[in-house]
Length: 394
Image 1 (cartoon, rainbow, N blue to C red):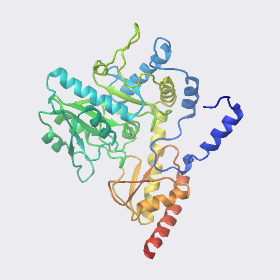
Image 2 (cartoon, rainbow, N blue to C red; image 1 turned 60 degrees about the horizontal axis):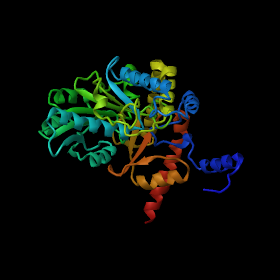
Image 3 (cartoon, rainbow, N blue to C red; image 1 turned 90 degrees about the vertical axis):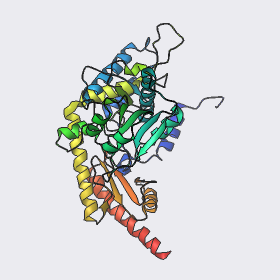
Image 4 (cartoon, helix red, strand yellow; image 1 turned 180 degrees about the vertical axis):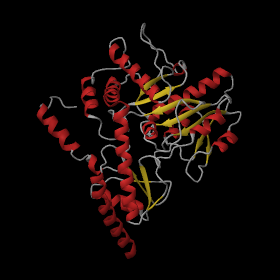
């Protein structure tokens, strides 16, 4: 740290210089986050000083967090009930869900010395962190031909050590939605916690279903679902960091509780003590401003752009690795890693999978437009031709 400070103008200039190296959104095709809604940005800035870990001071901000939790429970099929908290994102939400699952088993007297969780082979990598931290053993079920977790196999894998099953409502690699409406009935009544990781799909599927897209129901309206992860900072257009963990039971969020040292300071039901109130304020502002109609409109546009992207890829002769259920398009492509690297050198960011061979992953969200797609597709073809020529010379 410097002995004497730097003038504000110099600080701003230095920060602007470094941030100018960030890739602009109109060249990003790999992110399930996007530029947050302007109202959310404005309200988050107004709440930059707030801390949800100190509710004696930030009473109104805490009240808004409670409103957001209820709005999200309403969105996910549980109006007027349930419990939950805003958290830093999907990883923390999934960790708390598994903590609650473990502690629920302990309270029932069914926790063994080797607790297990049934997951799909495509479950999000955050669970690798979670299981390592909590001493849980994953029981990995291969996905079916449609890349979904098969309910019949879930039923077969549940045993005396099982404390939880994890289904995914929008996998981050393929955007695939597990048949939660089939998994729920096979889990219900077996003293096993069913958690749905909807970090990606939570702000897509409810509105897509309203628009007539054939997607499985995944929320608390499915009997057997105990908890859901949802990320407002993805398709919910809130500022980063803004995740949420939601529970069916009114007391379930309290199954993970850590007391503070001080009188009149409530227990913490999240991993973070100091939590940005700006996340609650931003999320509330966007939810209230857009409403269901606004999110349906955004979702309709995202699916239209996705269809435009798919049509352009197929017209160029490309084959998809899977038919997209949401707004993630995965394209089979030889030399995918090299193509991705070349695109990045030209300023375009896409994804390539470490696990699924020669594929490019393209994500459509609010900042991706038809015009952006039309600009990208010729660049992709140029990259493919150049890489094919490189390979031919080897």
